[in-house]
Image (cartoon, rainbow, N blue to C red):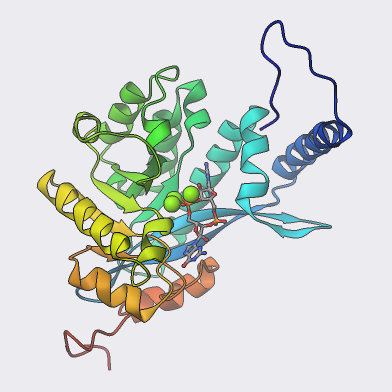
Length: 292
Ligand code: C2E
Ligand code: MG
Ligand code: MG
Ligand code: MG
């Protein structure tokens, strides 16, 4: 974020900062255009049950199909959407697209797989995320129990936006709540309980440490036992290797997500994965595939 000097402090504009600001203005303007011209798209990344290898959910991840720059990743425009106030509109677009897609999958006669949607702290600003969700679910005939909302620890504790009340309102719809990037913030056990979170997603940084350092395993083991004691399920993010997967399986982590299983894919490719259902094989837990 662009830093502003505090009261009483003078700071001269550095050329780099000036460049940044000009770039941000341009980006802001093209985000407005992108919203008008429907340049956003949602990709989906599967989440798999560690024990069974079954597809159990998927995460919706937004992409910007820029006419000149191609696919722009969210980390390059979400912060600008947040600081410019466009995030609620963008958030609405994502919710709408996800529900639309789920309704489409439903017409294929498939049993729907739950989808998780990322909501950032700033999206709580207008205080109507629960209404946006309720409206989209109703219009597309989607069961709220098939939707999960992912929020980071800091978003969860954003008092200014009264996150507590808003999360309660979202949960009252029947939507499940997951803590995203868990382990990178400062939430306490009591907060996790107070917010009635349904599950935790262990940040990729911890998954990466598995097999590399003793600490990685210690952290994951501690998080899993804490989460289970509080009645929450655990997803490991950023699983890239077989070794990590096997360790997470041994550590009783409920679900895994990451490039080892699949990269985020377009809705059409997701359909193939939904038909396949079993996305990993466990040599440790041999089982028969009913489809093959
Ligand atoms: P996140 O919610 O923690 O999402 C996980 C990110 O890790 C995604 O990046 C995903 O593509 C990436 N990833 C998944 N598996 C692996 C792996 O095995 N290795 C590595 N290196 N990366 C992996 P992506 O799609 O670029 O999204 C980045 C962040 O942008 C997300 O982090 C989330 O905070 C935010 N974001 C994405 N979509 C939305 C959205 O619709 N709304 C909001 N508010 N934020 C979003
Ligand atoms: Mg997420
Ligand atoms: Mg995450
Ligand atoms: Mg993240």
